[in-house]
Image (tube, rainbow, N blue to C red; front, side, top):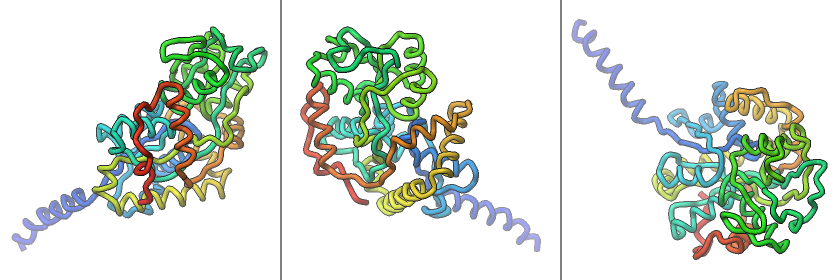
Length: 320
């Protein structure tokens, strides 16, 4: 009996150690944007003890969420091994794929379309690219999807735009800072994504000048290392993401409340239902992804000085 009492704690410790070793952690990146609704919904469900991915990936899987401001930072997280997967705009994923010579980065699913726009003051006379000569437009980050779209639009309108200046100034600025600069008249426009488009309309009396209704806004990307080392887990995650996307489309009212709650957790401020509702109407959540739109984005980015020497996209999109 004494021997049993001595061995019991040891056995319990071994079981606990074995369980800890069996646990797998998936580190998921995302932005505090409604265009990343799947991550916002999933993270909030995890806080409530109803983890969407956890329930579908098995009891030994833990999801850790990492918040980024924009795509280039998230892709750096993939490169350095800080995260395993991330919701991200297509241009940062393409840029990372190009930097790695077609290695390192893979797109495994679509996530959102639409929800990006150029916003100007409601009383502004700005109407076309030529009107922005000498003007300032803020974008979320250098080389991110909206940054490239803004530069391409200005160039198509006949303006010369460089990374440091040109005929118009494109100023990479964090989304929260864009709002304050816009309200004080220090910038003439903002090319960004939801919910910031709606906030600029409602909080800063802005109006939409250019809306990208059909543009790919968000994809789900991973690193080649994670793809090769945990292919079965990746396959399950992508399937759970597709299921979550369908659930969001089928339960918009509940999904919007979860998104609002998640944004409140991140920003420590109440998130207005009016902003969420307005933003939601501009978005389409989809897990579909195809190559032609990405090829078009490469051409557009190359036209404004990004993605030079881009490798063929044949390896970029994978179906786990």
